[in-house]
Image 1 (tube, rainbow, N blue to C red):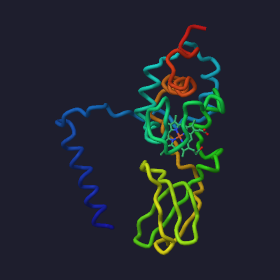
Image 2 (tube, helix red, strand yellow; image 1 turned 60 degrees about the vertical axis):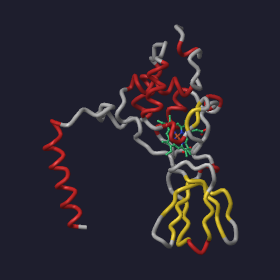
Image 3 (cartoon, rainbow, N blue to C red; image 1 turned 30 degrees about the vertical axis):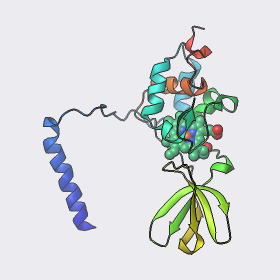
Length: 200
Ligand code: HEC
């Protein structure tokens, strides 16, 4: 443990030394803006001036990795719920709340479980079936078409995770205006013809 900390510290120092001469990264690194809360953004949302920017919202949806876990207009991976019709469930500030505070209200189908296996590996996923000899689980981190079947004999512990499988602070490197573009994109269901892209 101690050795590895020294090694990590060494790598950090090294990377600082070589950083200026390195080629620039393909996507510029984003800087921390704020650990946004609904209270910060609600007033901004209320004063929002249309139209919002479709392309900016789409780009942020991809950049923040929403597509790693959500389908929208057939794009992305179905780990979490399909967002194509999410506007029928949540709109405006309520939709924003779902994005900023994912653990507030979790659909039972998406309750995350942690499986600790006897080979010291772990899987986080959604329970599909709890059989006598095995459990079937959908991986909540890496998308796979087929669910995993884990024999009970290989399971050390099966625990309900206290939080959503959806990470928080995904938007902490974006500005308020960018977040409104993302919100508009999700609420519009990825449709560039939606009202939010037109002048009021
Ligand atoms: C690691 C996977 C993962 C990532 C990345 C992720 N989500 Fe989620 N998301 C989930 C899961 C799982 C749920 C369902 C459980 C819950 O409500 O917390 C969810 C729920 C939601 C909901 C509520 C949907 C409903 O029908 O109840 C919205 C809206 C949402 N996510 C938007 C986003 C946006 C926008 C991003 C990108 C900024 C994002 N998510 C990134 C996994 C993820």
